Image (cartoon, rainbow, N blue to C red; front, side, top):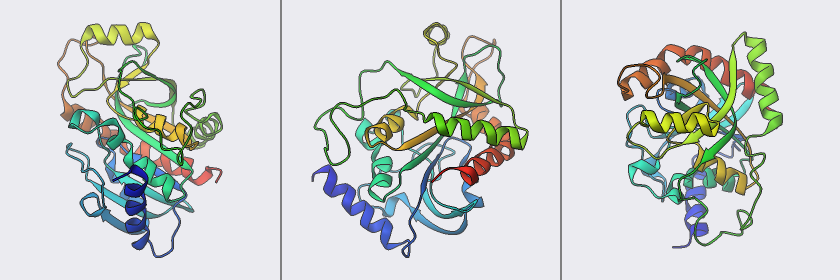
Length: 275
C-alpha cells in the first residue's frame, strides 16, 4: 500500500472520532512528560493500537494514546508517547504520526523530549529551547521515494525550529518566571546511552544536549513546512561528566520533578501560539 493511501486511512479514522473538531497544534510528549495530557479539556482519547497503520509505543513512560481536546484556548492533538528508531521502527514509521497530523490539517508542531545534558554549565532539570540539531547518522525519514503531496524532494532546514516560536517561548518563560536555556540537540540512535567519548565529541561538534528522538520528526515537519518548536527537559548529565552510571529511571524521576514547571511553560506557549 502506498504511503499516501495509508495516511489517508489513518486520517479518516481519527477524524471519525473528533466530531468535527479541527486540531490546530500537534504536541508530542517525551519520556516522563506524558501526564501533561491530563490537562486537556473535553478529551477524545484514541489508542495507537486502533489507528490504521500507526506504530505502537514500547518504551516505559510512553502511554501510547492520542488525546485531542482543548488546551489554553487552542485545540491540540497530543501524543502520549512517540516512536523511536531503536524500537526497530524505520525512520519512515517514526515520523508517520507527524505526517498524519499534516493530513489532518495541523500546521503547528510542538516537540518535547527528555535529553542528556552535554553543556557542563547547565544542570539536570533545566529546560532547553532547541535552536538547531545535529544528525550524523546515515538514515533519514525522507530516504527513498519522495511523497510529492507532502513536500519537495529537496528542502531547506535552516528554520527547522521556528524563530518566531522560539521568541514566543522566551516571552512565555519570562512571564511565568521560568529560566530556560537555548541550545543545539544532537541525535544518537540508542537505546544504549552515549559513551563518554561520544559526549565529548558532541560537545566539540557544538551540541548542548543529546537524545534519541525529535530530529526525525523535525525533519519531516520541515519537509511539510510545519511551524515547529522543540523543548528538551535535561534529565541527567550526559556520560563522563559525572562519575556515575546512567539509567532510564533517572530520566523518569527528573521528568516527574520538573513536570509542573514544564507544564506551566508548555501551556503558556500554547496560549500565546500565533495560529
